[in-house]
Image 1 (cartoon, rainbow, N blue to C red):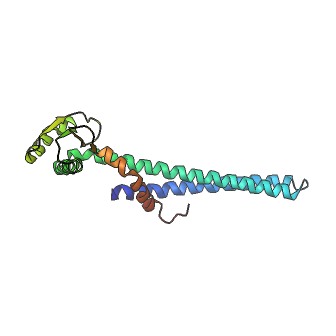
Image 2 (tube, rainbow, N blue to C red):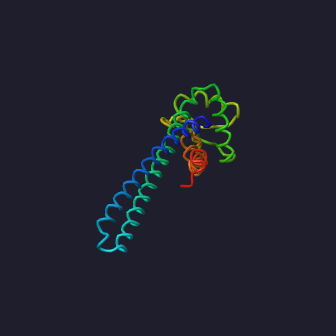
Length: 192
């Protein structure tokens, strides 16, 4: 995640620079337009013209802020997309069995002592059976989780409690907190 944030920080800097240049250009053009209108209306009344100049500049500033906001959102979306791609590669790693075991234990702990149903990706079915066999718990296994990247979903036998411990589910739940943390790193020192 640090590498992603570092790469994203570099992208953020480049995006901020481009957005700042664009914002400055918008403001410059707005000021030039305002000046042209100001000179043209000098005889018609200074008060009306000054208000128009202020309105045009305010509009340009709003547009500049909106451009910067959209750029930041796009950058954060790219960070999370890249994080999702990294998470999708975890099942290929040697650490994956231990991760899957931890996710299973966490889900069982949250559900309690009753029998559970475990849904995993097809490739993980043999692995989860081996892991669950160590616990001596009676579980029903399903291979219904295609497209989740990895992890598992645990449901109580009654079906009343479900714990989504898939990588995509966990990333989705953590996104709000991670957005603030990533933004603090990516946009450090910016006031707006």
